[in-house]
Structure formats: C-alpha cells, structure tokens
Length: 376
Image (tube, rainbow, N blue to C red):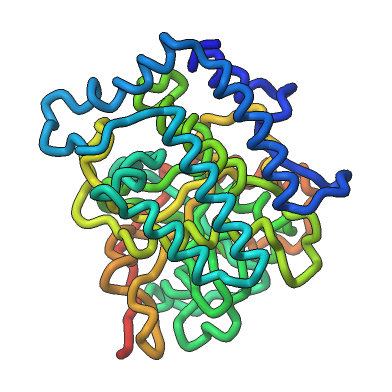
C-alpha cells in the first residue's frame, strides 16, 4: 500500500477509520475504543510499501531545501515516529485514567519539546491567511449598545471565569475564544437554535495565523511532508475527534486528550507571522482548528468553513476584562447583530436558509478593531 492509498482510505466514508468517530452503540469506554481504532490503523501502517516509507522519510528534507537552518538534527523515521507517538499518547491517557493529569501533561510536554521541538514542529498545521472571516454566536443574550461592548461576543470576561464550563478544548474556569468557519457551522455547534434566540458577529484576521490542525488537510493534494504529518499523527487526530458518548454526564473522557493539547499549544504561542507553505519554520501556534462533531456535512472533509477554531487567552492571571494584549489584536469584528426584528420563530430549514444568506453575502460587513480592556 502507498501512503497516498492509505490517505484515500481515510477519506472513504465506508472506512472504520474515517471521521466521525462515534461509539454510542458499543460497550467499550473511550480508551478501549480509541485503542481499537489505532490498532486497526497500525495494521495499515505496517502494510505501507518500502517505496512509500522511503518517500515519507525524505519528505521534510525535500521540503526544507532552501530552509536548511530549520532542518532538525533528528532524522525522520515514519514507523519509529508513529510508534513513539502512539505509545506516548497511550501512556498519557492511562495516567489520566488514574487521575494523574499533571503526569500526563508533563509526559506529553517532554515529548513535544524534545530534540529541539522535533515533534511539535512536525504537528499538522493550517495557515489562515490575513483577512479570513469567522463567525461566533451567543445564545439567549441581548448585547449592550455600541462598539464599547465588543466583549459581549469575545471570550467570557475574566471576572466571570466561575461560569466557564469544561469544553473539548477548554478547562473549568479558563475562557477559550471559540470561532467557527461560518455562521452555519457556529449554528450547528450550538445545536441549531431558533435564530431569534442568539446574537452573532463576524471576525476577520488582521494577520496570518498558524493553527494546529486536528482534522483532515485542507489541501486536497497534500505535499509528501503533509502526508507524513497527518498520517503519523492520525492516532492523536482520532483521539481528539471522538464524539461524546454521555453528553449529559459531568466527566467526558473524550475531552481529556484535546485539553492536554490545549495546554501544550497554549505554552507555544505564535510570535509574528508564520512562513507560508513550508514546514517547521515556526514552532508556535495561534490556536487549534478541528472538525465539527455536530455538522451534518461529513462528506466534505476539506472545507475550512466547516471547521471550528479555539484560541487561548494568555493574560488570565488578571482579575477582570479580556485579553486585549495578545488575542484581540489578531482580529477585527463587525457590530453585534440579532434577529430581534423577526417576531416569529422559524423552522430549522427556514433558519438555515437565512443563515446561509448571511454567510454568502459579505457586501455589508464592516469591521472595526475589537474594543476590549484588561484590568490587572
């Protein structure tokens, strides 16, 4: 089997190894389900041809011609790297099941920073260009008047951290700034609410941003180094994309691995603008981009508008306000809008049509700098 054939199999909706990953009807717990997925995948890895392994092992060296200063001293070995990634994640999850979460984090952190950040630089990443537009909604919320209240649609203010619940990429008490690639995706993430029940705004990037990509490559024709990155980290990607089996219960093991990655990425923030199109030239990340587990468009694995984005405030030791030093300068935003002019509730089908119109028509969108403050 070639690495291209393996990649195509991971895109096949009939494959057991393709997103979405759901185990509602299985007796297995999260760890056993994830382990069974990776064991199936490992058999595919073992079947890769010698020629494909040779191509993969030379992929980063080939891609970094002209960027020799970024060439790692450690050699790439696809099978050895896969085995190390698999065993490291496995050990980290076992530590979490024994309630040794800090041990799990230290294990993963040591892994990613070793050999001059060898594995951190190898992580799949997506570069979001300047002026890319995202959406965000907030339920059952009437926005304040004027641009001085931009924080109403920014991350939850630090003085309200006691209201922050555990989410896939966020911890209790730690406000994460979630964005969606479109208003439609944001709507699905909030379980398709009545359009009269939420406020929304659009956000536009002010510079290129580099995201850890825990999904399928956006480019339909990946370079060999992108194949390497995606295929070798597929155990991590699968572990972060498994749907919650018991959504009403307090502990969600499906959040453990994503939250550990939040800790890793939060410590490695993006500084400046990333180099576009080349691997390993910037080790930092602005956040994490991941596949929605609620969108019905599971047949479209490459569309950026169907992704979610998690960005992480850095100044959370402050007692109130918003991250106006690191996070808000990355974006501009529109005025906050509602559907309050509509007195009648709409069906989901009609609501979706209205939402699609907003996504498709950007002619009236006006963006301004985000007006929020941080209080020490």
